[in-house]
Amino acid sequence: MYNYIQHYINGQWVDSTGNETIDVINPATEEKIGEISSGTKEDLDKAVQAARDAFPAFSQTTKEERADLLDRIADEYEKRKDQFIEVIMAELGSPVTFTTNVQYQMGLNHFRTAAKLVRDFDFTENRENSFIQKDAIGVAGLITPWNFPTNQASTKLASAFAAGSTVVLKPSTETPFAAVLLKEVFEAAGVPKGVFNLVNGTGSTIGNGISSHPDIDFVSFTGSGGVGTKIMENAAQDIKKVSLELGGKSPIVVLDDADVDYAAKTAISHIAGNTGQVCTAGTRALVPESMHDDFIQAIKNHISEYPVGDPKDKSTFTGPQVSEDQWKTVQDYIQKGIDSNATLVTGGTGKPEGLETGYYSKLTVFTNVKPEDTIAQEEIFGPVLSVITYNDLDEAIEIANGTIYGLAGYVVGNDPEALTKTAKSLRSGRIVVNNEQADFTAPFGGFDQSGIGREWGDYGIEEFLEPKTIVGLP
Image 1: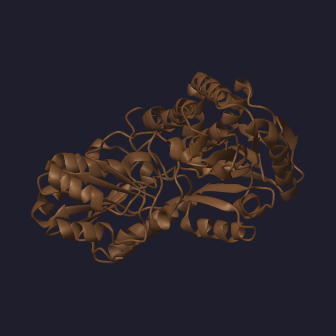
Image 2 (image 1 turned 30 degrees about the vertical axis):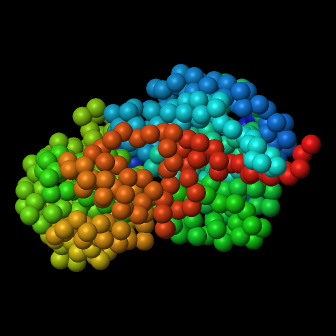
Image 3 (image 1 turned 180 degrees about the horizontal axis):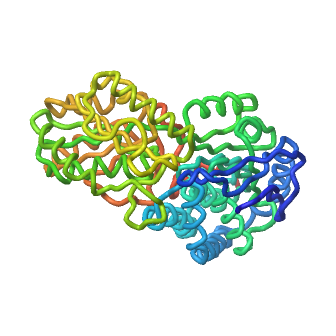
């Protein structure tokens, strides 16, 4: 059992001022694996004050000192690899192979990348008769989601530390224990007291408290659009800077010269990986009308290569949804797809055979989906793919850009001219061509209702800085 009914404030565990706790459930077994304290406004106030007190000294450290700190953090993070894998498997239900290769690794990559980049980062600039200095923004409130417990926290924390900002972190109540492990990493690496503070609790109390707190200078949030809207409303009361990484309904544009098997497996992997609980997941496959039948047959041929099952089994590709509520949401969307008269290719409602315990969904693929259908417009956050046909590339691009989102996009094909035209025409913050590997130095974020601001690399560091212009220095 993982039991943390205190908060980490100013370098030590502190009792909550309240008595309420929140149970954490293993989604693969539906069993309680621990509990956390449900923090109060008073708990948050203590954490913010600790961060505020620590800010003057930490913001004046040199970039070399902060780079060394980030390197030590990465070293300590690596020492706890097995612990991170065990915790993420238990609280998220993420399969062991995916957890090892993606969940664990992405967190490490952000700390290593930030350490490297901040050493060469220009915090000052001379421009004619102006001297520009980039100052740490102050106290940052970080609110992170459950689907990537280390990745989402680590990219924010690495950038904050690189910039010289102090932080208060509120992780998701579904996956809080990875954040506790990060606390152990920071403590061992020598993060100064008050620079990192961890307060668990509900979004209504701690999340709203962070976004409306007068002594928090910047809020970085990853999660749903509805919550993002509330954060902006709260932050607007004192004109607080906000960065939002929100939802997506990303297209996979399959060009007419693409290898059909490769394209089909690419599409399946997007809904199967992390059980489709990925904001950048390509959940709309846009396929030439002439390729449709072959593509659907390839889906049927390869779907069994992505088995749903026990996260501890190395052969498992897809685990459970994070919670019963999320499972019900996914089931509702699958039923909406059926009700819209889309053609069910594979999957459907209910749990996979033999997986009655656990919040498991079937890998589900619909075809004959209209671009305006609910399942093609709204973020499902589950293993559901909509196949949409197009007649020419201009139509494909129009369909691809035809949602309120713009977080990611994918292009599969061979012709360089068509690949380039498509990639440059998609209105999204991150475009991946033929499954190219992620660049952790490049910016991550979205257009339209997918968010505001950028994370990762030097763009992420910039979010935690405020430029100051000084004119006329002698």
